[in-house]
Length: 479
Ligand SMILES: NC(=O)c1ccc[n+]([C@@H]2O[C@H](COP(=O)([O-])OP(=O)(O)OC[C@H]3O[C@@H](n4cnc5c(N)ncnc54)[C@H](O)[C@@H]3O)[C@@H](O)[C@H]2O)c1
Image (cartoon, rainbow, N blue to C red):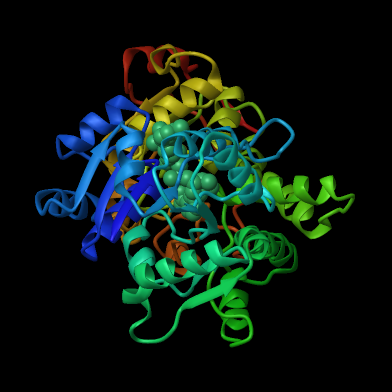
């Protein structure tokens, strides 16, 4: 089939590459000329495991092209996917300007019947606005379909190719029936083993995406709140997680306590849902609480650090493992590391940060958060290897559960650290093993013992960089 995908971000690129892999003739459009030039030259602008191979293979096979020229893509395609960003606005609502701008352009260049598929996450009622834009700017018949995307960054290709379900909302009437036939044909390869498509009306499809993300975010916040209680009561949240998740009514996914969720979806989609409800005079109290718990959870590691070292962290150096909001991505949108870094720097700490792939993105995001270029923040260093982040540090903070952090060389770690203290924001390590190895270990809800303030004898750190060494006093006593 002839397909156009507008938006070459996480969702658009993956959609384009996967549909091309199935033999479709796909044009992927983006307005960002630099991004399109990179893709045309065989590069991929985002880190997503395996995506570069899929893009290049399909480009070479002639099934996947990249362009900035939307008119030609509209003429080419029978089905046009809109996969552009819907970022949050100040009031929490989804910003639809990109979706509607694309709809207007499609309308202007339609030369016959088109199925316009909304893959972006958009509030209920957006399809109607897209229809209006198409009608105002075009003269041909069309159907606007809602087909929300459920892929996870870091496992995006696998999620797209092996979906649990494909949600498709089609409008009533003859155009809707025509769209349904085309969408059924397009997605037929995914339904060979069993029918995965859940057909519904457009508004329900739009709401299904928000309901799914809110439910997943709620599970995480629920477990984070349970973790605080587990700490207070002397229970281990990881045992609780296994016990709870073994119930087939509940299942094991999204039950991990940690430093809070981030990324481009859960934070913005929960806020947009609250806003949608408010516009109907309703309150989503569970979703509001989910957000509030998450905001507080992003502070938990900082509180643990302060409980041990005091609020004044000048003269202390901390290693950070992981910056991305989750493993297998370089996405820094709403990453908990951003909160932790800002808070620790504000208290005067020096930081050595390592992430396997997200360093450049992190530098961009942190420069924006902190309002100055990274080069002007002498207390913040980025290092290439995990062990380099431990040079003479007073403690390690684990912020992202990258696979390469699961089985580190603990002896080499302890050797480099000034004190063997680990704040494990992702519960990667076994508290009993860490204790045996001589570490002071604090996880999230793991019967924490390290929270007690300790007297830390201060001696000067070994120099790291001239600027950093100058910023540290020679010795201090805590608390
Ligand atoms: N990232 C995810 O994991 C994920 C998962 C499911 C759903 N979603 C949803 O999918 C949508 C896209 O998300 P994303 O993460 O892929 O966004 P993204 O920011 O990575 O990519 C969006 C792309 O759209 C392009 N774009 C914007 N306006 C355009 C226009 N007028 N014409 C052409 N291109 C334009 C941008 O240049 C950018 O490359 C959002 O609504 C998001 O909520 C995202």
